[in-house]
Amino acid sequence: MTKKERFDMTVILSCIKTDIKKQKYIVLWSGFVSFIISFVLFPLAILFFFLMFYRADLPYFDHDLISFFSDTNYFLIPYDIMLVYYFGVMYFKDKIQHIKNFHHYKKALIFSMISFVVSFIAIYFGDSRFMMIIYFIFFIISIYYLSYTYYDIALKDAFDNLKNPLYRDDDLGWSTSMGVVDNPFTYKDDLNRAKLFVQTSTVGFDFVIAFLNQSVNAILFWYAIGDRKYIQESIRMFDLILENDLKNGNEKFSYLSFNILKVLNYISIRNDNIRLPKRGLEVAQQASKS
Image (cartoon, rainbow, N blue to C red; front, top):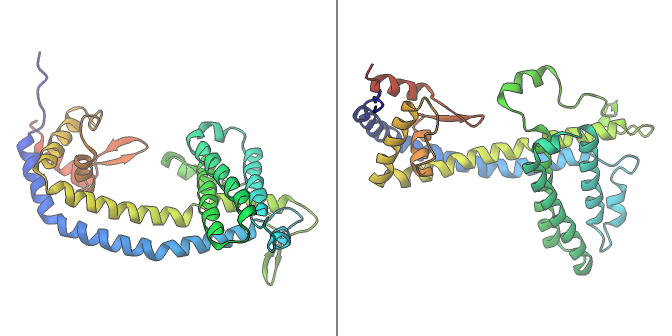
């Protein structure tokens, strides 16, 4: 017996065409503004990263090790040591999370290995700004994925994590008039600063990526609405999502049609599940045959 269709595609077609006409210039403007914001935020994210990095030193060594090697061909080796240190601190903090999020951890390992290779190449080239820039690109990406390995928190767990801090000890060193400084008689504060650094290192870059993502989606949206094929495909996709009760709606269709629905706020993805935002619910109610 043929399954009865519960939603009218002609209504969905009318709504999508109307919303495209209303939203296309707003989407273009928001994409442009998002790009400008990401361009401004990127150097701030870099600055924030290195400010946190400056606080996350090695136990007992502080940053003297970096100064000691700074005038030699081994000027990147101290950063390799610190990278290994951060991996070790996070591993002993939680010996399971890197297994649960191995897709992030694998990327962290790969980029850290590339960092090591660059640092050894730099030994033969000497002190070079170019080598340092290349090195820190991979260094930052390594820490970024290491952070996601241990702090990639699902939305449903966010409230619990507000009540339970992600790193459990607030001993970050001695509080002085100049701020928090290292306690030379213990390494606990060094460990906590390293955890805090890894925990917060993604913050600035997450904002940059979010705004860049919005810019890219705006470009893809404008490309997609210029081709009738993708508009028709987005209509069929949204109908299939509704007919299947928000399941298995996007496997048979292109990302461009999916992007049209996402930009128009017909659907959203949360924890790998499809959700209907306010506009999506409104269209679903209008298209319902019941």
